[in-house]
Length: 380
Image (cartoon, rainbow, N blue to C red; front, side):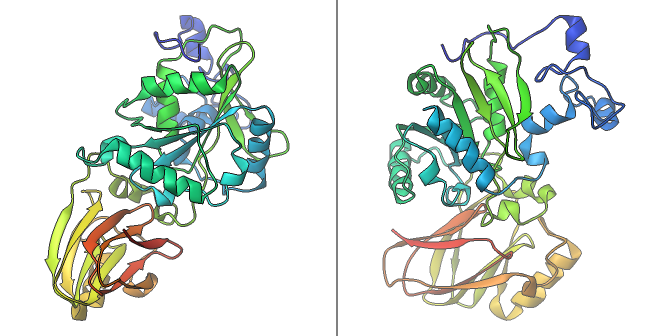
């Protein structure tokens, strides 16, 4: 069996108090360079003190920087594909495009299981079968042909039993590698697995640096011959989640089901999202726009003629949230102009942030985003 449902791993009181529950190193707060180090701040805050700092950071990748996809990851994936391991590629169902890792398809191999995570964020009336079919078509364009696609929510335990069953089925007694962009919920998923994990082997959960790379992975024994490897979240350069300060993520990443915020607007109107992003209707007929994004992001509506003044005031005073210390004026943002087709449903995706639905009628639109953030206009 891949997982045995039961109580979380427990050790004797003496070991639990003195050893890291993941790597087994003796916990100490004297030398950060030695195994088992736990910082005084985490001890003081009583923050998961059963783990050393190294293992704690692996369980919470979002608390540290994420490496870009490159040679080190390719070495890990080559090891996985050479051993015919199961590669679990995790995507963010809400910020779908922003969670894609460019060029990764050619390295995933033939034994791939795709997880579409954060189902709890999308409206309940969206059909899962439709979501899976759309994802499959998009994956094909990246050269990815998975064995299966599963819709999950790691934070709400949606379809986790199905995931465990499918992982058992496709791994066929071999290793499992978890791969995904930062902020897709991979660490939360691994934590959910650990809560239900029962180790019947003589091996302990451990962390180590993969030979020939700068990457640390967490190894979780599945049986005496195979393991599950949790790799660090990969930096996605076009996602806004990797272009703004981490404290802003609590506003940008939705924590509950997203409801559309709908506005009917004539031309020469603009919408300011917090103090980090702008959507402007430059020209075209009066249009109904449906904004799908975190409810924690404030929306300010203004005339185009007042846009720069209003935006600069918000960014500099922080009167609404979120605002960034890196963005003080409208000129700090990149302006991307979009000419919309004469008819048909349109979706504008701001990678990592959300999307905007409306009917195309030859509108002329501008989107202002932090530098390097991707914007995709799709006619459906």
